[in-house]
Every structure is written in C-alpha cells, then in structure tokens.
Length: 351
Image 1: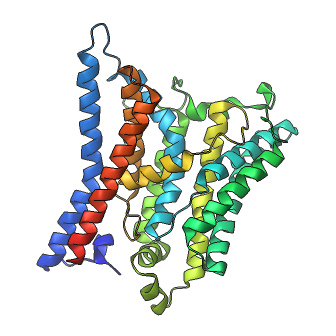
Image 2: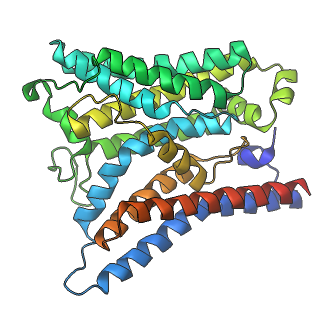
Image 3: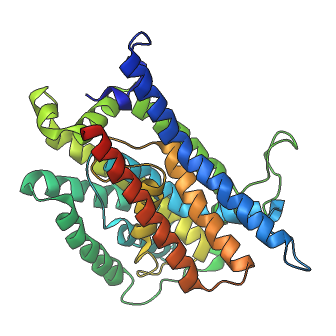
C-alpha cells in the first residue's frame, strides 16, 4: 500500500518518507490556500465597489455555509468512492430520488423521522445497487453509474407521478427546515464564541470528522486506499474486493441520502429533477480538494475546502454582478486546472 496515503505508517528516519510527508502536507494545504486566496480576492473586489462591502460579513458566511452543505455532504461519500478508484455519476439523481421519497412519505401522512429514514434508506439502496452491479458485472463504474443515473431519475419520476411532490407545510417540522437555515437562532450553542451556523452545517462537520477518523484509523479505511492504489495488488493481499466495493458505494449512498434530506429541507418539495447535474459539483468538490480520479488519494478536509471554494465563487460572482454562465465557466476552469495539476503530479511520481 502506498505510504503516502498513510502517514501513520511512515518512518521519520527515512529521507524519502520525509519527502512524501512534505508532498502530502502540500497536497492537503493546497485547497485551503486556494480557498483563502479566493476569499481575499472577492473580499477586496467587493470592498472596492462603492456602496457595498457585504462579502466579508457573518451573514454572507452563514449563507454560503448553508447553501454549500448539500454538496459538501454528498461529496463526503464521493470522496470515499474516488479514493477507492471509482466514480458515481448517479449521485445527483439518487439525491433527488431520496428527497422525493422523503416528500412522498410526508405526503402520505407518515412522521418526519420515518420519512427521513426512508430517504436515507433510498440513498443507501441506490449506492448498494451501484456497488453490486459494478462488482458482479465487472463493468467500469463510469458506465454502470451512467446507466443507474437515468434509472434513479425515472424511479423518482414514477414515485412523484411525473410531477412535484408537495407535502403540507405543517407536516415539515422546524428541526428539518433548520438544517439549511441561513439565519438560525442560537438555540443550542454553548457560547457566543461558536459561529451561529445552520444545524445542517454542524451536522456536516460532524460527519466529516467521523468519516476522516474511519478512513485513517480503521481496517476499512486501509482497504479503501489499497483498492484505489492498485486493485490487483489489493486482491493478491487477500482483500475481498467485491465486498469492499459494495461497502464503499453503499457508504457513498448513505451520504447521498443525507444530502437528499438537505435538499428537501431547502426546497420543502420533492422535485425528481432537482438533482440533475448536481453530481458534477459533487465530483468537482473532491477533485478541487485534491482527490485523484485515478484513485488512491483524497482527503476529507480537501473535499470540504473544494465545496467551500465553489460556494465562495458563486457568492462572490453574485455580489459582483456576474451572471450564472460566467460562474460556471470560472468553476469549470478551476476543475480543469485541478485535474491538470493531478496529472502532472502523477507523471512526476511515475518518473
């Protein structure tokens, strides 16, 4: 297994290992540095506009965090999939399927906790189906998830009867809506030193910490990195590759299901097409954060930074009066740059 992905197994006495540590640290801090530069750029640009200066404010920070949380949560699961050498193009439609299941369950009169569990279960099931198909058919994940992307979209439309599912507003509890509240009340925060962020942002950070610990300190985490680094070697080492793949995609589906709950909390409806194209932002968050599409490398902190970077760019462009097409072109350019840097790094390591 590549020791670059597992600093805990390195020896400080080995100069080559020390260089690997340095490269790993640079790779980890790179997305954070890029995020800081983008924040500073938009902050200065907004400050220079006469009569404005709203970018570097607490309210804008809360808004960006709440709006980014949906993509960030789904990207956590995508990080594990990409580290394992896979990809999931069905994440966007599986997310809208989960949101539609939640709305449909509420419409039928079931309690909100049960509806949330149904939505998360739908996400897990979608991920597990991806993993089973990839393992059983031995077809590349790109093709399998490209097919299931359309299947999940059609399933969501069938559940919604090809329309939008609109549960009664009184059936949506306040705790569910507070997941993405851009102006939350300080209901449970211990002190004023904690930023007053939406509950969903704190939940996303908690999930990120938990997943980072799993990847770093568990046997499953080592299997994930081993699978992405070299699948053939992982199989020769006795790793049950099909089972690990199923577990990886099911875990990714779990986070997609949670993101579907966020999506419903933001829209208060179940729209079967609301997640179409969202998988591109989810994958972009991982890639911008330093994840390698060839597998074997990625970090939770980098993914969060990548998701935040896209949120900051969207907010900054809006405040500067730039149109959505211009925002898309900027984010697209950043994705191309991130993939280029990754490819250059791969060639340097192979040399």
